[in-house]
Image 1: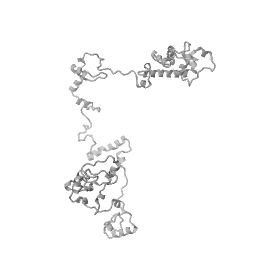
Image 2 (image 1 turned 30 degrees about the vertical axis):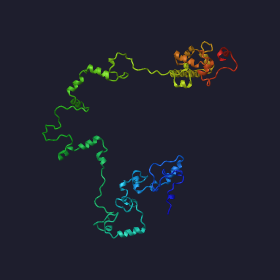
Image 3 (image 1 turned 90 degrees about the vertical axis):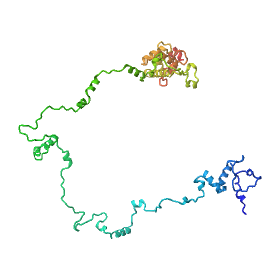
Image 4 (image 1 turned 60 degrees about the vertical axis):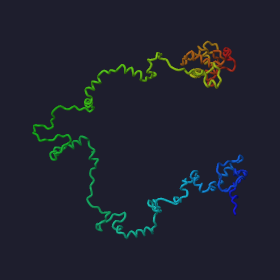
Length: 425
């Protein structure tokens, strides 16, 4: 007898050896081939590799009886498996071999019809011999004109009948001849009276000859000429009636209530829409709510850790003006003077070795950049490194000149000019 316990033994490594049925040893399993009910739990010492190998190597559906498998396949079908109702699970599955429609046999492809293969010389001659037995190949051969009932002496390809038509004037010369306008009108009116007498046909707009007496001229006109305007003024008068004209000339009147209503409820540029303004006794410049006052320092002041007296908030425009004035004075110095000493002498009017506020004001006005006192004070404060309220020669050369592009003008040996200004030492 074949040992079934060995075939149903768990895969080695799938679960620990000591992990068994919860009733193992207490009861005898009469149907060991049927899987126990409930959820399978794993021991704490199992790892991921053991669990995955168990699911891959085990076949749970093989241990389920057919009476239960049909319910399981309906509720939990496997991947790629068709879901069948358990009531039709035991029915014969004819649909697996069933096919609808007519079986189409392979025929000639479109390639063979559009571009058939070139036949050999032998097959071509054999095909012509087969077609020569047909009557149509003699009376109406393919690609040739049938002779019909013509005599044999007449060649249908080279023989023509009728008289050849000589080339005459083209339609271009008839519709638009190469003649001046007066010559065309003269040719059209020439012998027109004879054509009227013979055919009784007149030109468009021409008056018919009613054979009156000779004393009456049929070309004579009676009455007044009807005025014709091509700008449409008569059509305008016929459309605009008299009441319409009178309405255009009347004085426009408007209700005061309507005017006040529009003034209250119509939005105006630069003014807020406030229909209930008259009900409140407030001024024109009154606003509601609290004013959002920002901090007196910026993010840059926090990052650089500036002191309270050196905060830069609100001074961007002032710093820009100071930078523009400094750049202007530096360009003025490099254009007008050759050395830094010569430029400093021009600035220092009182010859004390320092440039003051009044000196900068005079030079700024003289150079074409007049500045106010606040801007000049900011410039002096920005250039005054030692904070004495004046600009010495070193500060002048560093902040108000392009010292790399200009010569200093100071000799290597000390001169009287250098000893005169203590700021140069």
